[in-house]
Amino acid sequence: MPHVITQSCCSDGSCVYACPVNCIHPSPDEPGFATAEMLYIDPAACVDCGACVSACPVGAISTASKLVDSPFIELNAAFYPARPADEKVPPTSKLAPVIEAPNIRQRSGGPLTVAIVGSGPAAMYAADELLTQKGVRVNVFEKLPTPYGLVRAGVAPDHQSTKRVTRLFDRMSRLPGFSFFLNVEIGRHVTHAELLAHHHAVLYAVGAPNDRRLDVEGVELPGSGTATEMVAWINGHPEFADLPVDLGHEGVVIIGNGNVAFDVARVLTSDPDDLARTDIADHALAVLRTSRVREVVIAARRGPAESAFTLPELIGLTAKCDVVLDAADHELVQRDLAVVSDSLTRNKLEILAKLGDASTPIDRPRIRLAYRMTPQRVLGTDRVEAVAFTATGTDESRTIEAGLVLTSIGYRGRPIRDLPFDDDACVVPNAGGRVVDPSSDTPVRGAYVAGWIKRGPTGFIGTNKSCAAETVHELVADYNDGRLHDPVARSGALERMVRERRPEVIDSAGWKAIDAAEISRGGDDRPRNKFTSVEDMLAAAAAAPTPSLGRRLLAGFRR
Image 1 (cartoon, one colour):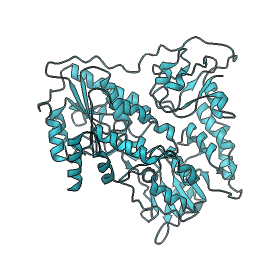
Image 2 (cartoon, one colour):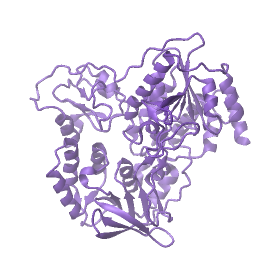
Image 3 (cartoon, rainbow, N blue to C red):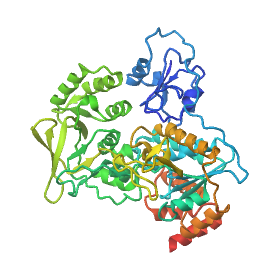
């Protein structure tokens, strides 16, 4: 019985390299790898050895026998040409790396030293690419006391398999030459110029932290927010732990139908007892236990064929939740099915066509997908009461009652001090990750970007792997060609400077102590129980086995 991939790809590539018969595609040397929603196992080539199951860092691979009636079996098979089930095919991939950074040419002045700002997937993949070569030191700076960015604070708590990629990041952080400087904000505690004085290069992987805001009347009313803020609140992000969330109303509207919208809708309609076995924040679980929400409407401006969510997320949503469509939207789905030829889009439409009818009674909290709905204004006097829409392209109006309105319409990068910024694209101007001054079209010496601040808010967690590899390729090439100046500061001066300015800095030992404490707090029933305040994180980090660091942390906390 062949194995089957059941969720979006993390792009680690371990499963591809582990497979002895090269039956997993697209592989890293194939053009579709970097942008694929998921990878596919060829059922005619799979020898059922299980190597891919052990290699996958996020637990996305299962045997077909465990997936009764799962659409993933057909999806994996449909990626390949039809062949007899007993036909075995030869290897079809040479497994060449997508981008192979040139070997570092060692200098007499010391190893290549790189500062990475940010600690999410793009940052960690960049660190991993750099540390595959000898003679490299990487210092990762993060403004929060905990690392891993959106994997920790942006992935829904009921997607624990996706969060397992942090195990891979933990292994990266233990590589020789790697150091954490957590709870340190670049631009506030340390400047870009100071980083360059201590490193050959600075690589920014800070994501796109700002939400795109809906510009309609009433959006400022209490009860209106963003799905991103909601996910951060659910996950216990310390900056959003006190977000005022009122679930005392039966209706919720989410504007935008990407994966984040699905995450929020799924959590809001889930059984709190099921969520209690995840790493959801205690404050969020307490509010969800008192929730009166009966229906979450996910409204999109465009039609079903243009849906922003990915196929694995749609399959996962319909497997866990009651999801329905209005009769008019069912007609839109059938209309799109009649003209769409793209196989991925057709797969989405075929699943949408099987959804229930919204006219049926609501037996338990459910999700309703609504299409061709353009928001006009948020209605309410003292707080949100409803949202007024028009049918896209018409004058037909429609009002949906809701006590909570969340927008999920995209993200924007934030300008980085001392670097150029493209206000239209909301990214740092760059060529392959090398920062470029748009006024002169020349590289900014020693400055690089990866992730969303480089390419915009596109792709999945795994997309950052090839993105980071491209940036590291450019950085190493510049180093080898002598375009990166040696640090002027002496060895050890960086740590002294940071500790003087930020006594509450947390290193790898401190993060390990926080991690261990959270896992212990989770007990036998939960993967972890997160700290949601910086003060509690600092107190946990002070228990790290390095006495001098613990004393510094406590001293900083007491001040």
